[in-house]
Length: 97
Image 1 (cartoon, rainbow, N blue to C red):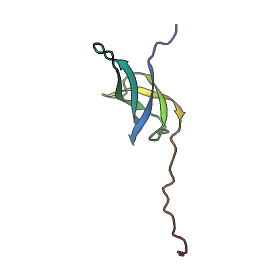
Image 2: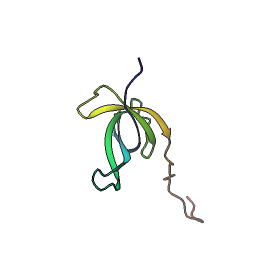
Image 3: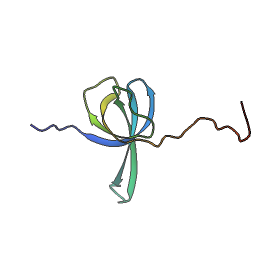
Image 4: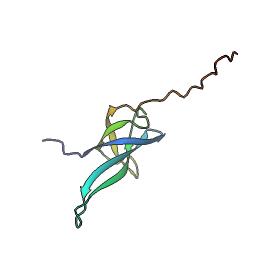
């Protein structure tokens, strides 16, 4: 029998909780009456066992058992890492320690 779990692809918008990330999934749908294409975004809390996800990562989440009141998804795979910016302060030229 084939597994029938939902899978969604989204971007990690928060990783401040322990073993939990917030993933924002963007979709486009046609408005039922007017026919205009509208963008819909929804946020899901997903279980990240090893705290591997960083903000801005593209991830695939899969439906799973309830881990808590709001957390019913888990991170299946990190598809693309976010570009990390070097935040070390630069020394001014000619300045010595």
